[in-house]
Image 1 (cartoon, helix red, strand yellow):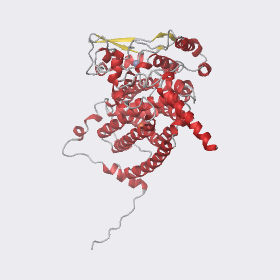
Image 2 (spheres, helix red, strand yellow):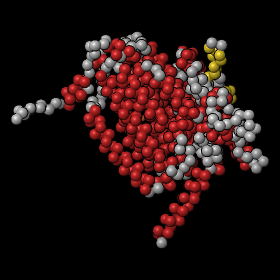
Image 3 (cartoon, protein in one colour):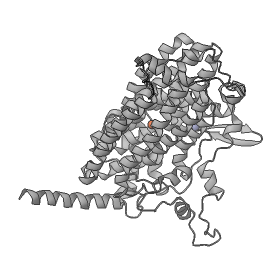
Image 4 (spheres, protein in one colour):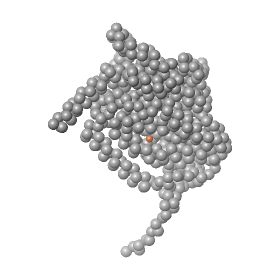
Length: 524
Ligand code: FE
Ligand code: ZN
């Protein structure tokens, strides 16, 4: 019989060291630099990876156990929600369009983040950063899955969700989030961490998740709220990774400071442009409002973000270059974006509508300096056009110019002058490229070889890349817009168009009516 081995139980700290740093080894058959070629070429200098601190001290085995428990709770709620027809408890069916935007534009980013962290984690020679990236990679895959499951229930009852992966790869407004992440994960591993862990997770994530999740809670959507809670503890780990990574790079070598500053300038602006979609959702798409975009910006960006950059000043870091312009934009971008989507609702995969009278009043009160002056009359004019039987709902038939960098249509106005569209150009090898702002132009000018490759949906439509194979462009009966929608797999009129004319609205009214009758019967 074998002798019994007495195992000494490790303390928490030793156990953590054994399960993370203890798993690292230096390669001997090949030099480390050849095995890890990407952690140097960006110019970031790391002298001592052991200085990397992981504040959570989470090991993989504890991670799985902890996540497994959260998973059980989440799926119990989703199940109960489905059985009780929770979709009928939302404020009104307009709200569902915020979920469409989420499954079309946010959920695919979780999958990109999963891929990006697998890739970045593989490239670091430091074990601490590798373990943190690995856990975040698994978190992000889980977010993709849980969001898909939480929202899939709505897909049974509402239009505009059935083809979201194909849309993400093709449809114009979804190229905004898509290009953001493809730009990030085609950078080096340190740039990826600055883009995603720091700018996105640490500086901007509150502006994404707080409006979406408290919007969901205010509008009666318990399924999405439960997903949000389940992801929240992961998010706090991700945010900590973001700030840890920035401080680590800044502390390791002063030569890292200008590189990190340039990334912060770039990724703050790219993240801010991406949030245009969230700003619009917050001010226009939630039937029951939580707070205005402007209020959210002031709370989460100006005061929290401002304090963060004050703290980083000791390393020689200043606020991102686009900061002032972004702060001015808080008064404008949601209105400019909703105006654009209102005009192009026939080419999107969700519905738009005009704000009601009381919603216009709410906007006037939240935006006292800009809404009455620049935007209210526009919505009222469209309301008159829509009410006139000779005119009807107006849809813009011309495709807009897109910014080469952020891929948002040219809808933003000049800093300091909200009556002029902001428009910039650069020339590169005899070709002209177009930008929405000084900051998008500057990002392009620094790496033109990267951004000339952008797949711009509007240009692709005009080049004929977005038609179904069986189309005959010479046939007089073919409508280009209809054919592009057919290629997208968007069902014109039911997935898109004005909300008031939609089957979603009609169905929701019918089901809610029937539910009210059933409830009254049950009381008898
Ligand atoms: Fe996530
Ligand atoms: Zn731009």
